[in-house]
Image 1 (cartoon, rainbow, N blue to C red):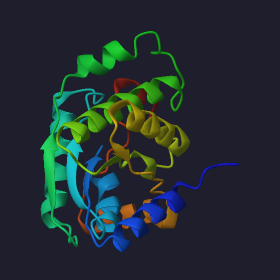
Image 2 (cartoon, rainbow, N blue to C red):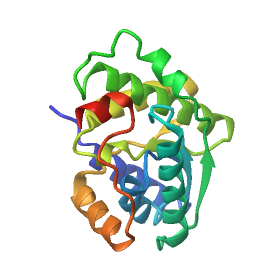
Image 3 (cartoon, rainbow, N blue to C red):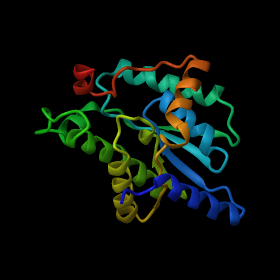
Image 4 (cartoon, rainbow, N blue to C red):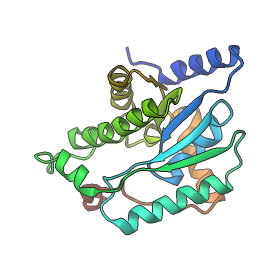
Length: 203
């Protein structure tokens, strides 16, 4: 039976609320549109720091455009608790070296799973180093992303780094629909490909 990741998230939120605390969360973000609903939703329950770490993006101009939109979103979106941002290292060679041999993979298969792991691994490592209570990613909000694989990776990294993973499938509760609404309200740049040269060619 398929896991209900939204239910698991609800259980964590309920547990923390009973303890009368607002835990810290390191949230990997791929772009402002995907972050919009997630920040609106989770800022009610967590003190969020965004990690913008996306070496998969095919060129520096595109990377910077998405980064600036992420910063603008943080400054303009009304959230219950304040949100801060950490910018990760941008080096497209990191991604290219990891996916060697998978250049011809279909979109949404192993090449993408390697990319998920790359970004979540860095998030988990920093969450451990900086003693965040939880880490997770905005990626599951996309209907094109495999939430089961994302959560499996998150759990494996929880064990690797001994730091708590926050289960998520942000498509639930009309999350993707709300992200589109917020993107229109804030006039966010909505790119039409994931970020790498392969998704650009397949768009």
